[in-house]
Length: 389
Ligand code: NDP
Ligand code: MG
Image 1 (spheres, helix red, strand yellow):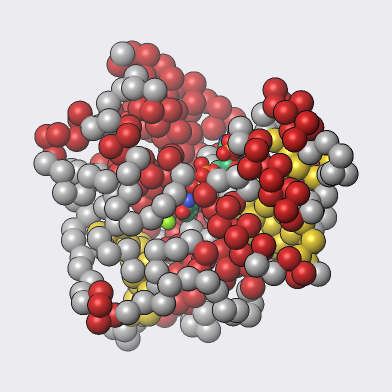
Image 2 (image 1 turned 90 degrees about the vertical axis):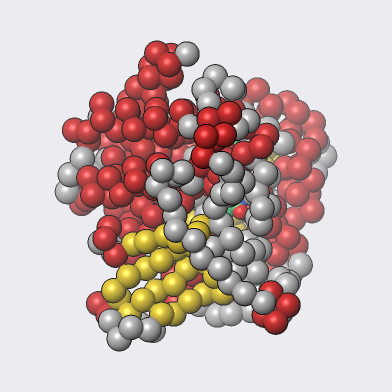
């Protein structure tokens, strides 16, 4: 039996992970499940999977969780410190699926405690890629990408000579507004942005798909995960979301990864790595699909892509600055304090203000440095937003 923990269990990725685990309960012993506000879901899954401990990140919801799990023998805890303590509990495999930079430390701590880490939380690589890789190396654990594009690149690179790679293309669906007239984007509402044409995901990543901040984070994630140069990394709009990534080699050939728009593929790949096991995902009918199409990722429509390039070139702590300012801009857009197109403007201003956070030696980047840059960027972003409104 493998011991596993799931951080962000109540979210979209967490629930897909639980779907896979619950199909083979005899294979897994669940150590920790974590959630946030959704206590009913957390309690239900903790009971279903017989978890050792259920943790909510929300201190104020401890009593609710305690009540929901009364008499079950499952430990309960709440708050940030409790979440990190749960991540310290040894297990064989952990899923990092908290949304935002809040997911960084639980993932790091799980690896430090010896777990192979399945990483859905792309923000970890964007903010602290060198630290994540260093921790995995020093503990001798696998760091496995779960983001579909990065799982695709990982799979396309298996058995290949990395020095023969010329380019990597990660695909983008284009999100909710790929066909909207440009002049209407400024008036787009949060509920319009939170509708995705192909993928069923959490609210924040769905809005980030419409603005392409999600793809921007993923371009940076690609650089950090695989150590490619920024100029080797591209994106293309592929509205069908069937090809997740293509790796181009120096002999002119591409290895493309094709699969249904179902995160259980990438999650299952990371769960069973290094073997492959049968997964409950749709089998594609290529004739029925008919065609795959591609479009230019226009940087006028999606300025986040241009900003990602600048961040990749700048290096150092600029990924942490980019992500934190994006998180604050997204909060302000969801709260209808700023418009859809203001998000990129806010992030760009913060990147300019904090441009001195670039160029560090990756080996010197510590958790404290990342957290400080994150904190500062949130503060600056809040100021830029206050000046706007
Ligand atoms: P969701 O919003 O659906 O879920 C987020 C999870 O994190 C929930 O369990 C939530 O708890 C918990 N949570 C939220 N805020 C905090 C916090 N401050 N501290 C601790 N826990 C918190 O997100 P997704 O599942 O969509 O995404 C999770 C991660 O995976 C993100 O980094 C995303 O970019 C990445 N990802 C997601 C994909 C997808 O298909 N959804 C695809 C590829 C990557 P609660 O809901 O109980 O409040
Ligand atoms: Mg993705």
